[in-house]
Length: 163
Image (cartoon, rainbow, N blue to C red; front, top):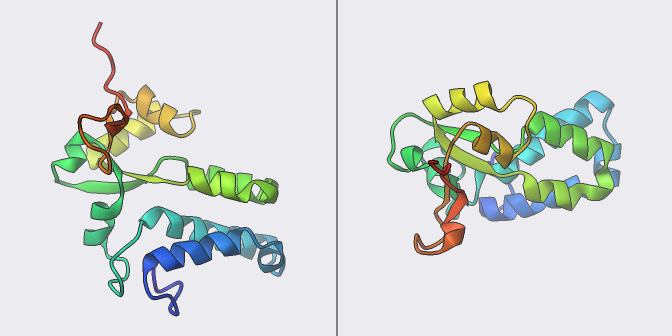
């Protein structure tokens, strides 16, 4: 991430700068439509990588450890993917159409670590759905590892009830 913001001390600072740029009509207004879409997409990506320790930059190995949302299978390890809960195409279109809702849209741009198999499930079951609804439709449980397991908020998307 720091390659996009070389003057930032750490990626948390880079995330803050990305939010400022997304909220700045004068910054985005200076680009052609095509380049503006590219810039918005890159800035939104920065928001989903999560904070890295000072000076470490963004590495694939670290990226998975810092994303707070993950499925139990991804928590266990294996072949993992950085998956955008709210599709970046959707977010870019929303942000370009509603720049006044920048902070609201940016707050929804989070990532979830899933396995390769779960990623394929999301692609198959999530068509036409947005955000966490895709995960519910695919029958995936999602944990918020920042929470204590005894806290009901630990289960971001609860396991489907077995009736």
